[in-house]
Length: 197
Image (cartoon, rainbow, N blue to C red; front, side, top):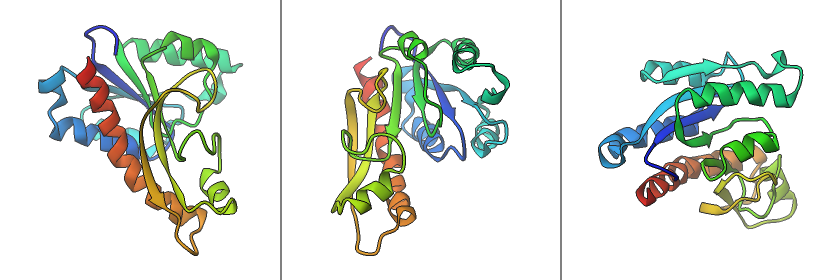
C-alpha cells in the first residue's frame, strides 16, 4: 500500500457480507490502533443494497450512485472516483461490486485496488464460476483475493481458500460453502497488505 494513508473504501452491490466480515475484523483486530487503518466509507451502485443499511448502522459513511443514471460507463466511473477520492483511500476494496470497471478507473487506483473472486484463479474468470466448476467435474473450488488490473480477474493473487466440491452439490450449495471461506480470507489478505505498510 502506497504512502501512510490507510483509509479503506469498500464498494458493494448487494448484501455486503464480505464488507461486514472486513468491518468486523477491522474492529476485533484493532486495525485502527495497529495500522492506523479504518473503513472510511461504503459505496454502492444500488441505493437499495442491504449492505448500506448495515454499514450506516456501524457509523460508517455510506453513499449510493445509480449506474443507470449515467450516459456511459466512463461517466459513472468518473463520478464513482470522485465519491471515493473524498475519503482519500489507501485501499479500495471490491466486495461483491457487480460492475466491470473502466481501464481509467483501474489505472487511477493502481496498486490500491483489490477484489475477491469466487474461484481458484486463474481458473474460471468471469461469471457463473460455481456451476462451471461443477460442470467441469472439479473436485475442488474456492475463492481468490487478487489485485485488480485492466484484465478481468488476472491480477496478482494475494490469498486463496480451497473447498471440496461434494457429490450432489448445486451452484447454490457450493457458493454458500465458498462464501464462508471468503469471509475469512478477504480480511486476512487486507490485514497482510496493511502490515506491509
